[in-house]
Image (tube, rainbow over all chains, first blue to last red; front, side, top):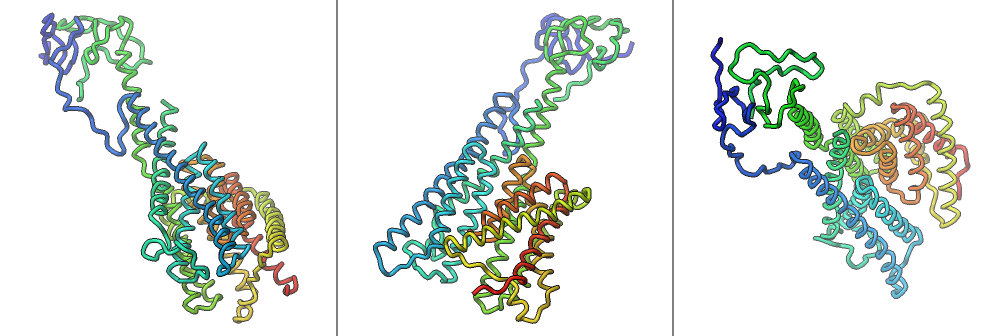
Length: 197
Length: 283
């Protein structure tokens, strides 16, 4: 009979195969509980090890994705206020003229942002993508017009940070939308996997 | 922590159960508890069922963890391509301000933006190549050509309607090219062929394929159509551009190929050129 390494049980003295954690006869733990090295810290791309942890993780991702709703609401409100202010300025000051086409474009953009806000309440990820593209384009064009000094009507507040034509709010909105897209994408991938579990 | 394989008959579940009479008598014939997890051992087991279940869960969790680690490159790349093309447009406007003629700016824009699109395609080959490899049934090409008449009708109605309703000017594209000495073939190449190929590669190839990693087909069609609409930087044209984008996206998803969309786009733009040459110059 070959010699095999054994682990005697401290409670019932039954020999157990080496590497066992519990005794095969009495079921008690063979060794003192090994130190686990402290709580596990999750990295950015680690999956939590328990079902409860995974639920927390996906809830957190979902919350970040839903921030897109707030950002799009802010954008829609700003986009609505702008034509209102323009209208009031034009009405009260003979210096400024209003082209109907320009006004129509402002109103149309505001309507699109409201539509994106509504969409984001049920599906934040695609709405955030379109919102980022549309608002990013808006910001890019503002920067272009401000730096090329093409704007005929020098409306107050149109020069933004350092004359670049954007404000800190614009930067915050873009950052929130970009983050929401990242979180929303991870959330969807996780949901797709978990539906198989 | 790796537990060494215990010497009990640890056979796979679908193997016939071995007789529980191992040679040697160092330990019990069948265990009363599992060595690994301590669960009470049911005599009919050939392996510890809770351990097997835990192993199964761990495998699925590994799959989920892999999904989480998957980088978001396709989506980021899609949005980055959009802004790269936007940068080309803004560059074109800067060129005009600097005194470049509109014709030369259009040619330059076509060259630069095509290069940008090709670079992105090279980086997203896995997304784009399958759509370029598949050539669907010829019926789809006929449908695309027919569809271009519909999209052209919608676009013309929209442009004409806005012109009549709030006086948005209708723009002519071809006059400057002829004045600069270019012929009809070049105009068709620049206005119909180049956008037909490269806008499809960009918006239905890289962008739709990229967002398709995290969006449903319908959502991907809508998002790529929205981006296609916005890049043209003409809010009055948004409605018909969006409709056209939806049609092109649907073709891409339905056929799995970029070619019917390219044909539709080419025919649509060609109809625009033909229409413009055919009707007299409006005052």
